Length: 428
Image 1 (cartoon, rainbow, N blue to C red):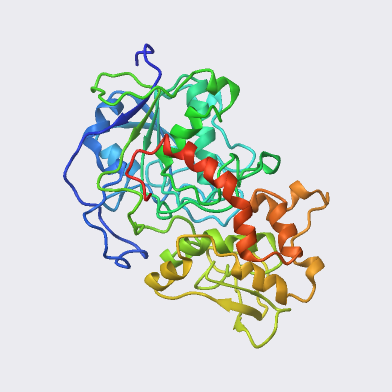
Image 2: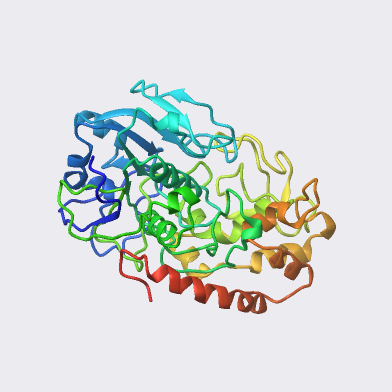
């Protein structure tokens, strides 16, 4: 691979195909004007870059091409895959949230799998020494505390630092039709929030990668490569450092139905749309519905009033351990049809659920999960929010409208940054 050009190359080649819609999340919305084709489906665009190379693939169960896994598809095309990297929940996507995932071998192909979750989040020089080119293909849900964008950042940094070309196969963002939430204060940086972006940032993985490079938000060594140098008419022989294979027929007005569950507890589109609003409960003593059929659509606690909706979380394959298991909880069930949930969400984070739960909870001193250190930056709720202000606003009884008003200046500033890196028509 020539090193004369180290740039982010954006591919604009059109092809005709349709995405196969399979799995639990299909057939729920029918308003897509034409079939959306993720970057992975456009094989004639990127296969020439992979042939004859030793390839590493960052993937999980969402990395499909018409229902067949990317790894299996590439192998059938004669591509030499020497290594698979896996994110949170593992390569096959079956591990619980936060569960340690060990290195392994893929039972189907025998290819070594390296887990990039836990202490080993970033590929090392040794991990990449037998690799010619890296591929990234994972379905995201467009929410800051969903850890795949953090994994993307580390993968991008490793590629730049080790002078390995990286190809990002872009996929639509199911929450890509709005931007909302508090912008992260870097004092609260963690793996559930690494950059000063709002909770819902309205970008695909490819667009987000461009922003990381263009804003110099990467490691010093990666920033030194000066990777953001867009060319729009590459040829098959054009060397690149990072390239984004765009989706076809997608824009930020699109409501995209995921063809496969992105993680064990986001198994319905309703959960994906509500996740930006109800994941806050992960930082509280309340159950967020893990261990039920509708995680992130149901939430509550045994101490809440017994005239509320009742449910009992139980261990299951996607939630082997969690809060309030085997206890009757009282709270809220905000599930419904996809259309009902989308209408109620109203293209913004809904704080009313959090406000109601805090107001009704009898032991307010124990509402938020408390870290041993007692430091504001160590509260998991604050890591999710990206600041300590939201917790204080809840304690002070600040109305939702005023809380939202406090987000406005930083949201406006982020939107200006975001616009520079969009690859698809925006919603505004």
